Amino acid sequence: MDIAPFLDKPTAIVGTTGAGKTFAAKGAVEQLLELGRRVIIIDPTGAWYGLRAGADGNSTGGFPVLIFGGDHADVPIEPTGEAGKALALALAERHVQAIIDTSEMTGGEKNRFLTPFLENLYARNKAALHLVVDEADEVAAQRLADGEQRLFGAFDKIVRRGRIKGFRPLMISQRPAVIHKNVLSQIGTLIALKLTSPQDRKAIDDWVKGNADADQAKAVMKSLSTLPRGQGWVWSPADDVLKLVKFPAIRTFDSSRTPGNGEAAVAPALTAVDVDVLREAMKVAPVAETSQAPAIGAGKAVIEAAEQRGFQKGDAAGYVRGYELARKDGHANAYRLGFRDAAKKIAAAAELAAKLEPDDIEVPPIAGTPSALAAVHPDATAHIEKSMKAAKVIVVDPLRSIGAGDLPASLQRALDSVAWWHSIGFDEVARNRAAITAGLSPTASTFGVYVGKLVERGLIEASSPGHLRITEAGHHAARRERDLNVLAMAKAQLEPQPARVFDFVVEAYPAAISRGELADKMGLSRTASTLGVYLGKVSRLGFVETQPGSMVRAAEFMFQRRR
Image (cartoon, rainbow, N blue to C red; front, side, top):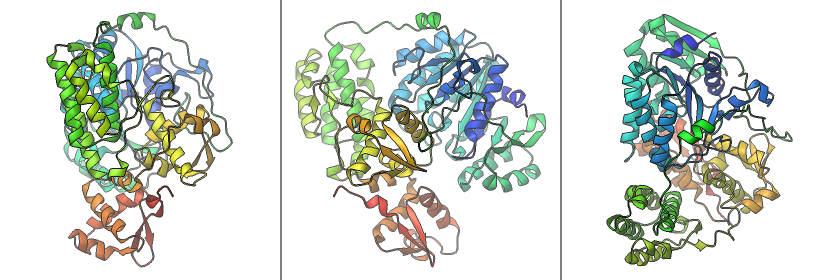
């Protein structure tokens, strides 16, 4: 089916992991590229670069799509607001087809980069533009965290008011329930593949009530939980279209696929593109080579360490004082490039620390020294040194650090996770378990993307179906071993009510607990379906095991610790 005509209005492609959402989304974008449409893809997964190569990895079969950022960048991008604005201005008035790869940015960096990018793209764009946003819930979450409101506002404006300026947004998500309702309500075309979560189906049902025919919805809603892989509904009420479609395989390189056991990873040959003009247009005035330059690097390293592991609020106060001294001393560049958001980020880190046991609060080694901040203000040094000591930050010589600087932070965390399981006696580890100890959802596609990149580098291998093993090269690249609290990391993947179920099941371990007793502890009716919804969410992530007699037991793997 040619779905390109239906993509001229706000569109959402939704489907659970494994439903074939990637093929449906990439197939839709391939149709747009074949038509020569202007397309910009915001890619937080690092997997869209495959559009630049043929299905067999040959450069002659790809599209000349420019890639900004990530491992396959034609033009690298810095995770700053200045770079986001510069890229928007470079793309807004040009007929381009581009991928903006944000997969190596932290959450805060994405926020800083994408907010001015979307604001300036909206302000300057005047021609038809298909803006594709993968993992759309990252920019339009139903529950906005502190600091995300401005980013959401920029995207919401594009979805609700952008048509007059040429925008045709295409949102992709495996969880429609967590996309902000203001955005979801604006879609004119829905492409829905298999959805197993009752909350996600409810989000689709809510859209139906405001946009489509209730009688038509019955067949759709009934089938959503059982649709086979690669099959989904294309629904455009304004065009009077409701059709069940089998989406074909994509025609470009499948860069989301993880090589099987014994299979060599394919490194595709990417179609050549000319980026000189855009590279010149994107140039941002560099930070002046002044005394605050080393302080910026040290400050950013401290912030990154805080984001990754968290520490106590008393330590956070020391960092904030240092940042404030830098700001008050008039060093605007240092303030703009990282100090501005320090308080919010460290508060979030402190929340994480409160959930962990003291032994689990650990900050990885960072390059740089606290004395570098003396260039900003002499008094800042004492505050930073005291905080770094209290938070157990280890200062290392960057020229001597092994592994930590060789990989992007996202890939390093994934590699370290597999290495940790090996360190406690597992020759291979299930992918979903490695995802959890990497701080990622075991059902999301993000970890699979990281695995693919690590396999390409020869650092891990797919040892058996669904399992990973670290290679000799991976051991050398992994950072020093540390203990992990698997229970805390698993619970962090859950929403509040499923997390309560998780706590009660874990409390009973190693014994099992009955569903009836769980309902009583939760204050729920034993005959209502509510407990089943919460328990189902915990079970799908592999955190509990169902046993005979309506009993459930916490999964043993979560109790693994270094022996």
